[in-house]
Image (cartoon, rainbow, N blue to C red; front, side, top):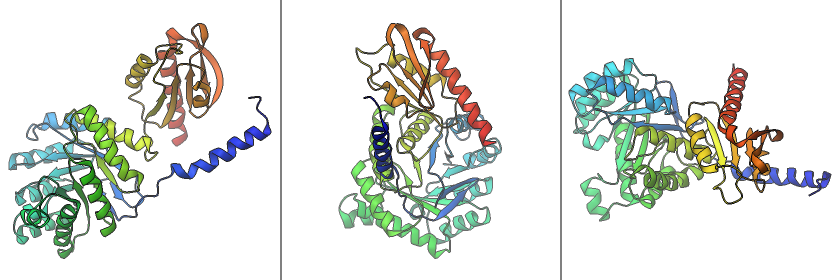
Length: 382
């Protein structure tokens, strides 16, 4: 249209009117600390993953933890099934810069050893550690060494008496199991913990978290457990975790995939970025492409995702193949590309048309612009 003052006023009013719908009011929860990372309260939602190397292979585990951290993970969990693993944990922790959660099952001594080794958190289910005296010893170690605890309740390992009571895994059974374990820790005067009530069924997990969120104010660790392969599991997790996050429920997340742990981190970050709950790296807005495209959109986006994966500064990039939606999307992003005729495509900077770039130079030119913008953001932050 021939834009006039009325049009501009209408657009400003429209944009201001939809802004509240973009904001998620998070559930108020307690704040706990894992190493140098806070969880709950007003802390940003953190992303976790878990190593799949043998913990006894300290070198391989250190390497994988650092890869996971470089991808953007805030917290990494490491399995400690035996004494050799907790022994290796002490060496592992010396060479990583993210808080380590020690995954403990059944053997209370492993929890004590992991705390002594420097773990920032112990993932336990107090109900399967053993007698109250053994749980008391684990909690004492957590207090002595400044560890937090995650109570991990799972739909696949609900206590037998609860299964008999409810006849099947259900939200009420998961939450009652969590409440039972909460009381164990509270009776020991320990409150530095978070809780998860995971299940592989989306509706079971979501409804359990909804119910638990109304019964306590402890931080909640979200996950759809055993979600599946990278593609299917990411979709499944995005639906379940996304539903909860959009309702303000959740303080830390893990995407449980049968895939490289780095992919879990990438998926988790994308979920948070999509809900405007976390800003890290380049957020690419791109079209699905069609006969109107002036360059190969799909291939361009694939290459740019790889070439820009090292960028940690938050910025937005739109890649649109034609002028139908291109200018509008570009006006809302830091850097934009809109396909143009005869191989001349328009570059937008800060929402304004700036210059043209030929199709054969798109990739290198966009990478250069993004890196320059990221450097500006870094310098402003100093």
